[in-house]
Amino acid sequence: MARRKRTYVKQWKADSRYGNILVGRFIGNVMQDGKRSVAERVIYDCFDVIHERTKKGGLNVFEQAIKNVSPLLELKSKRVGGANYQVPIQVSGERRQTLAVRWILAAVRSKKGKRMAEKLADELIDASNKVGSAMKKRDDTHRMAEANKAFAHFA
Image (cartoon, rainbow, N blue to C red; front, side, top):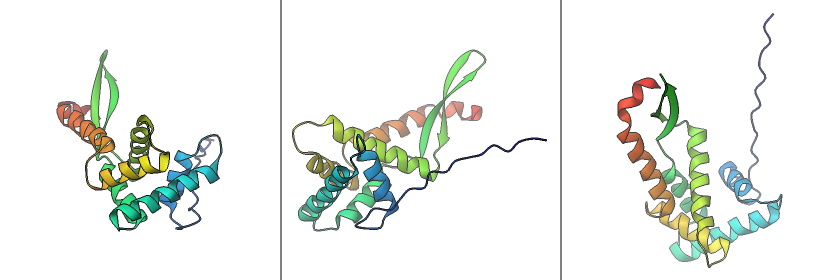
């Protein structure tokens, strides 16, 4: 008799202030060494800075930024007949958000000088306006996928 493989699905918790699961996931990704309260303070300070600068809600700018940075295509390496091909594939919804969060945080952490909340606010405002380092990463990924469209039949 065949055994069924158990799959584990991570249950994300909503954040305490907005009750938003995406913000809860973002806090989890910002968090280092299990210091959730520090990560929450950084995110909420960031949302306050965004509200001061744009007069829009910090949560609205955040959601727009995630939506803009989320990629539609990505490249997977596929080995066919002794050669490796970069095959473009469509990205599912959960992975799109994960990649967007990862790219935004990578862009923020690469910057130097200001406090984390201000750097994050800058990047989120830029991403919501479709500019910035995270948007450049998304555009580069799409450009590479477009260039390798000839290998799509290997997917």
